[in-house]
Image 1 (cartoon, rainbow, N blue to C red):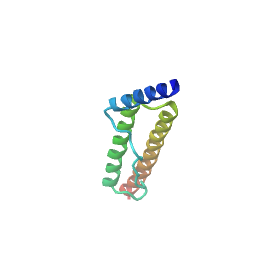
Image 2 (image 1 turned 30 degrees about the vertical axis):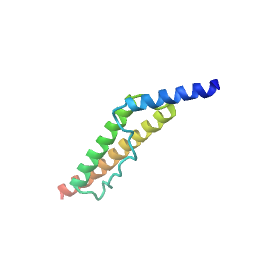
Image 3 (image 1 turned 45 degrees about the vertical axis):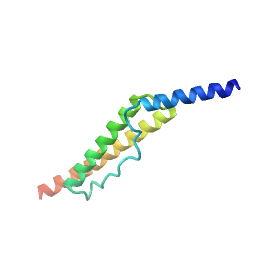
Image 4 (image 1 turned 90 degrees about the horizontal axis):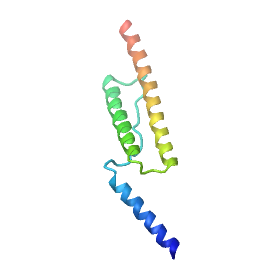
Length: 102
């Protein structure tokens, strides 16, 4: 009986903490275009989507409603998205610089 009461109290406390966070947990990271073929507009939209996702994830992590495993997993997704964006923007810049030099 005591375990049930304690488990219920902990669950209610966790729900209350989650409700206090004004930011929704971010879903899947945005799909980024291939920098080798993307247009300038595609890359700009990708930048906005990546920035929005990262800001939402950071705000959600600041709420401290996740356990350490969940926090590390979300931080890893943010890091992977950031790295992928950097790779695609570098490819895009190399391609557009090569075109501009012709």
